[in-house]
Length: 226
Image (tube, rainbow, N blue to C red; front, side, top):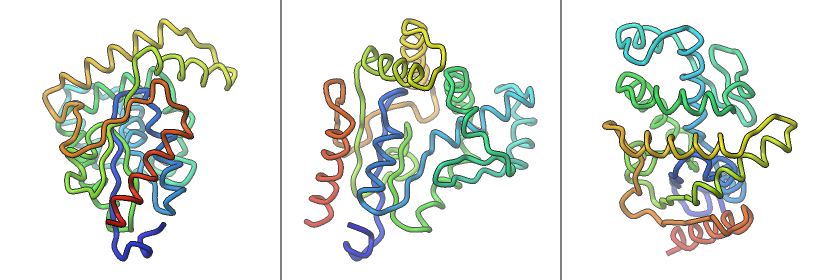
C-alpha cells in the first residue's frame, strides 16, 4: 500500500527508548508500505559525533549554533552523510548513543534539526522513528506507535547484534548504558521521552522483529482504510 493507494500522503511515527529496535522495525515497515523511512535518531547521532569531534561542548550555545549552521546532513537509503562524508559506521556505537542523548537535550540542537525533520513530509509519505516524532515533530500523524521492551531484552539484542558483527561487547555495560539513557531521555526538560497522545503501545520483549513489523503494518493498513 502506497500513498497513491490511500489517495493522500500520510505519516506513521514510531517512538520509544534506546535499543527498542525502532530503526530496523521502522525501516522494514516503510518497505512493506512502500513509503520513505526517516531515521531521526541517525540525524542526532551524526550531529553529536561531529560536534564532539570538533570539541564543541553541549553548554557552548554560541559555538553550537555557529557549527550547526555549517553542517549539512543527507539521509540516503543505506548511509548518513555529514558535509558529504559517510559517517554511517561511526554513529552506531554505544559512545555515540550517549553523546546523542546529551546533545539532543540542548535547545539549540533540537531547534536546528526540527525544521529539517518536518520538511521530510514534503517529499511524500513516510515512517518516522525517534523519541519525540509522534509528540513534537509530527503531532498530527495519522498513526502513531510507542515501541518498547524491557531494559534486559534491549541490552541482550544490542549485545547479540555487536557480537554478530565481530565487535567486542559487554552485556552488563550495555545494560547499564541503556538504563542511564532511559533516565536521561525521560527526565530532560526539553521534549522528554514519553508516549505520544493516541499512540499504540507495543512491548516487544517477547516478540520477534517479524511479529512487531506485521503488527504495525496490519494496524496502519486497517487505520488508513477506515
